[in-house]
Amino acid sequence: MTTYDVVVVGGRVAGASTALLLARAGVRVAVVERTAPGRDTVSTHALMRAGVLQLTKWGILDSVVAAGTPPVRHTTFSYPDGEQTQVSIRAGHGVEALFAPRRTLLDRLLLDAAADAGADVISRATVLGLERDAGRRIRGVTAQSTPGSSYRLEADLTVGADGLRSVVAQQVGAPVVRQGRSASAVLYRYVRGLGTTGYEWVYGRRAGAGLIPTNDGETCVFASTTPAVMRRLRRLGSEETYLHLLEESRPGLAARIRGGTGWSRMRGWRGTPGHVRRPFGPGWALVGDAAYYKDPITAHGITDALRDAELLADAAVVTLGGGPDAGSALPAYQETRDRLSRQLWDVTEEVATYAWDADRARTLLRAVSASMSDEVDHLAGLPRAAPPELAGSALARPDNQAVRR
Ligand SMILES: Cc1cc2nc3c(=O)[nH]c(=O)nc-3n(C[C@H](O)[C@H](O)[C@H](O)COP(=O)(O)OP(=O)(O)OC[C@H]3O[C@@H](n4cnc5c(N)ncnc54)[C@H](O)[C@@H]3O)c2cc1C
Image (cartoon, rainbow, N blue to C red; front, side, top):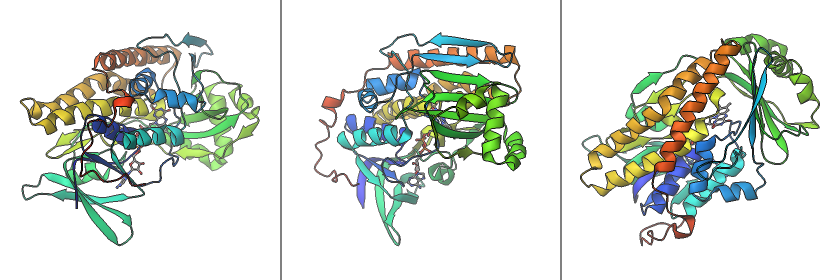
C-alpha cells in the first residue's frame, strides 16, 4: 500500500490540473488515469477566457502555443434572423487570444506538468473502488493496472475527477443539488482547408453549429440539436443529418463545409442533461464533470474544470493543513463554484432547449458573456500559482514513488 495526502481519480483537464496545483503546493499526490497519456476524448476544444487565463497562470499556455494551436482573436455570432456580428477578443488579465487545443495535446501537457511538479502519474490504471475506515470516511482507492492484481493507494483526501459517470461520486453517494433537463445531441468532425480564424457560433432553427479552429490546420465543425430531433434525423444516416443540421443552422453553411479539402470521420454525442453535485464529504471531493456537468452548447466544461481545479486545490491545501479554516475550506469551494456557475448554468439550460428566436438568442448570449466576466475577475484576483520553474521544489519527499507511466 502506498500513502499519499491526495489521490486523484481521472487524469484529464480536471484531474491533471488538480494534481499539478497540489504537487506545486508541496502535497504528496497521485493521479490515476484509466487511459494512456495523450488519448483522444469527445470534445470540441473551445477554451473561454477564464480557461486561457488558468493555462497562462500555470505556465502551460506557452506549450499550447508552441504546439501550433492557432490563436482565436475574434468570435462571430450568427442568429436565426440571418444577422451576423463579429466581436474581437479584448486583451485583459494577460489573455490576448483564445485557443482550442486538441485534447490529445492539452490533457497530455497538463499531465506532464503534474508529473514534472512531483505528482505520481499512474496511467492505464483503473480505480475499482474506494477504501473506507471504520468510521466510513474515505481513505483512498483500490486500483488495478493489470487484470487480476489490484493494489491500494491510501490518502487523506480522494478526489473524483473521473468525469460525467464518476465512480467516486456514485460510491460516496454525492447528492445532486441541481438537475438539468435540456441536452444537446452533437455531430462533429475535423475539416481541413476552411481558413477559419475565429470561433463561429451559429444559432439557427432548432439547430446550432460551431466552427472552432484547432491544431494542424483543422477546424472542428459541430452541428447540434435536441436528442429527440437527432434521433428522428439519424434515420437519414449521420452524413445527411450533419449536413441537414448545418443548413438548418445557417443557409449555405453545409456547402461551405463541403468546400473543405479534407474531412475526418464523424463523431457523435447523444446528449445527457446536466447535474451539479455537492462536491465534498468526509475524505472525498469532486471536480470537473464529476462535480458539475452542463450541456456543451456553451463550450465551457474545460474552462470550468480548469477553474474548479484551482478552487479545489486551494481548499484541499487548507483542509490538509488542519488549521483554523480547515473545516470551512471545502464548503467555501462549493460556495464559490456555485456562485460563479449559477448564471451560466441557467443560460445553458435554456440554450440547450433550441427553442430560441433571434432576440432571445441575443439576450442569452449577452448573459453568457456577463457570467464569464465575473469568472475571469474572480480567477484573476486569486493569488498566482507557483511559477513552473519553482514547481516541485517543496516536494523532495523521500517516500514519493518514481513517476509511473
Ligand atoms: C460533445 C462535447 C463537446 C464539448 N466541447 C467542449 C468545448 O468546446 N469546450 C469546453 O470547454 N468543453 C467542452 N465539452 C465539455 C468538456 O469536454 C468536459 O467538461 C471536460 O472534458 C471535463 O473534464 P474532466 O477532466 O472533468 O472529465 P473527463 O474529460 O471526462 O476525464 C475524466 C477521466 O477520468 C478517467 N476515469 C474515469 N473513471 C476512471 C476510473 N475508475 N479509474 C481511472 N480513471 C478513470 C477517464 O478515463 C477520463 O480520462 C464538450 C463535451 C462534449 C460531450
